[in-house]
Length: 136
Image 1 (cartoon, rainbow, N blue to C red):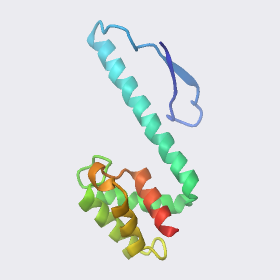
Image 2 (image 1 turned 180 degrees about the vertical axis):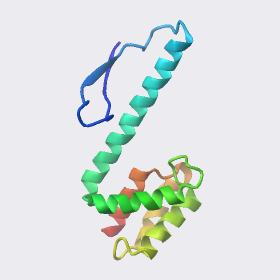
Image 3 (image 1 turned 60 degrees about the vertical axis):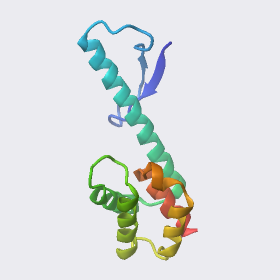
Image 4 (image 1 turned 30 degrees about the vertical axis):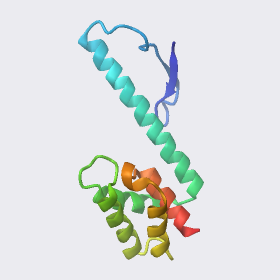
């Protein structure tokens, strides 16, 4: 079975490409590397698309998204692109202390604890959703 994916490598190269690696035997290391690379590209594409969808849904401006991303990256101490409970608390405190969004304080904390995000971690898209939900 073939799978069609689209890669956001650059604005000009948005053509679908076919992955015919599924179900095939891996004959050499080059095939394995190609499979791993393809998996990484498809995973990155899904993350990129989810993030783009969340940004559109929340209606945050590019400047706001850049500010939130800056806090996210600064707070993601281990660099795994997910915030654990401690990192999320720190990120939310930073967003509130920098007054990036007015009226966020206790509402933001309540949204955090209402969701089951503490166990699975928070990626950037989820952080944007938490902020938007807390805004009301």
